[in-house]
Amino acid sequence: MATYVFRRLMSMLMVLAATTMFIFTLMYFVDGDPALMLLGENATVESVEALRKELGLDDPFFVRLGRYMAGLARGDMGISYRSKRPVFDELMARYPTTLKITLGSTALGLIVGVSAGVYSAIRQYSLFDRIFTTISLFGASAPSFWIAMILVLLFAVRLGWLPATGSYGIEYWILPIFTMGLQTSASILRMTRSSMLEVIRQDYIRTARAKGQTEYKVIINHGLRNALIPILTMAGIKMCSFLGGSVLIETVFALPGLGKYILDSVTFHDYPVVQGGVLWICINAIVITFAIDMLYGFLDPRIRTMYEAKKA
Amino acid sequence: MGTVGKAPLDTQQATAGRARRRARKQSMVAEVWRKLKKNTWAVGSLIILCLLLILATFAPWLTPYDYRVQDYDSVLLPPGKGHIFGTDNFGRDIFSRVVYGSRYTVLIGFGCVTIAAFLGVVFGLISAYFPKLDNIIMRSMDLIIGMPTMSLLMLLIAVMGISITNLVIALCVTTIPGFARVTRAQALTIKHQEFIEAAVAMGASDARILLKHILPNSWAPIIVQYTLGAGQVVLSAASLSFIGMGIQAPTPEWGLMVSQGRVYLRSHWHMAIIPGLAIVLLTFVLNYLGDGLRDALDPRLNK
Image (cartoon, rainbow over all chains, first blue to last red; front, side, top):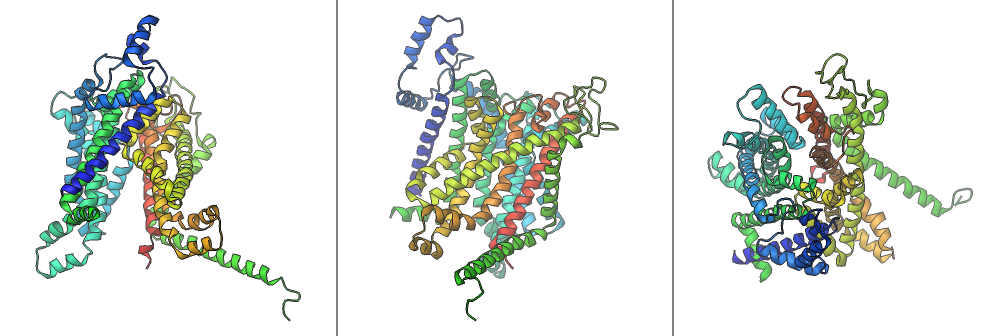
């Protein structure tokens, strides 16, 4: 297990480094003088030059890249042009909002998606299966902002049960989490159904039934356990996707999250925030992928053995 | 007797060979169509897709009003007589704007995915056939795939600026890796087959092997990826327009129309919901068709 963890950790760090270089290189070509943006248009030429020298903006590309990556290791992502505060502090102020929605919707999606997917698989071609397969494809096809607006129209405007916008209490989180949870459960339902259908046709399932095991244990302990890996992969993909696409939900529900902040920063040309924000989302995505990889090794001994055998 | 009065033997053989190849191609396409026809919903999706394409092509002749005309006597009318989808805050007919907007969605959606398919297939074939280039190409593709799509799109638009060209470029960048991966996987399977070895032994050039032997046998997953990729591109383009980083006003793009209608959601829901329904319909039929094609092209499902 230790070998598996070590190899995946090394791989994760390499991907992190490559992603940082990629994002830094892209942002390097953006127009505009960072020193002038920080000091404002009324700054004197001398002060702009002095700040350029202090920040090392005239240094070669690789020196600036190395400096940025070294700063990243210390949690330094530069200074926001708009607020003049460290980018990392600005991102951390908004990160919990995005994280709450992402984690909440993934949990809801897993609970609903896996339950409905398992039932759909064991009752293949039933009315339940056909209805839920179609609804899940519909959910996977619909844009999240449109589903959010439908739910706001129904629960906030027509029924008045829940607030439409803001984040002042727990009731304000129900609609955003429910919206993204529905979308996540649609994708997870499809993956669970497809994965379970493959697994329940295996010989070991027939053997377990022949040995007299209860149907519940056959489906859950033998079936679902072996079907979990693609389901977890899909859950990981949806989490990463929602981290990046949270801007859509935060716009509809007026939540002060990371995505909305990055979007506003693009509008106001606050490039250190755009760079730092996108990088932070990518770091989260890479860590989630690493965590899912660790779960594979924990769930399936064959994957652990494969990595240990490679080393030998 | 013999070949007197007949075509030379090599021409006869060439003609017979062409006839055999034509029969094989027809039977493969016919076989896929036969399987697809059994899936009623996939056929229905194909019909709806064709109808949408017809709407997009003949939009100026099918719309009752000019999509740009502002009628301040008919502002924010609900769906009803005269305006089947109602009007917006400038008195513009929403049905005409949705139909005309299908042109932008179809052009950008299918245009991006076609360019991405072309480039992705090229990268995938090169990666599979030339092992020295495989690592660099696939690691680059993995880097793009590893980044959340919306984040990468926002980053690219922030760097390049907001315009239709930059939108197309950004969407292509995020779509190419899917095609590259799928093509590479399929090409790697075919590369090790004996007929490729025979072609190499006969002195065929790399380009000939790739284009005449490997690519024609790799179409199935590429077609499925095309359909599913088109659905993803439509959603991404609509999402970018919704947040103001895609197509700009007054163009009647569906995502932009949803964004403009959001302000009036409480009182005039039709302005935001109906264009959104058009996005859902197009993405749904593309996904359903993609699933149907995947099942029809899957050799494991041969009975």
